[in-house]
Image (cartoon, rainbow, N blue to C red):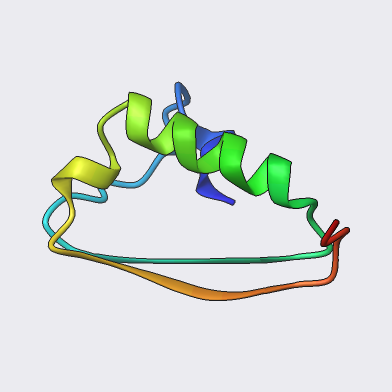
Length: 61
C-alpha cells in the first residue's frame, strides 16, 4: 500500500484524484491502521474520490 511511501521522496503527488486502494492477505486491523495513517497525513482529505477495491484473504475474525 502507498502507506509505506509516506515520508519518503517516492510518495507520488496524490491530490485531487481518485485514490484506488486494495490489498490481499492483510488482516483487517492492519488495513484499518494503514487507512488511519493516510487520514492523519491528510491524503484522504485531498482526494476527489476514494475507491476501495478487493481486500481478500487475511483473518476475518
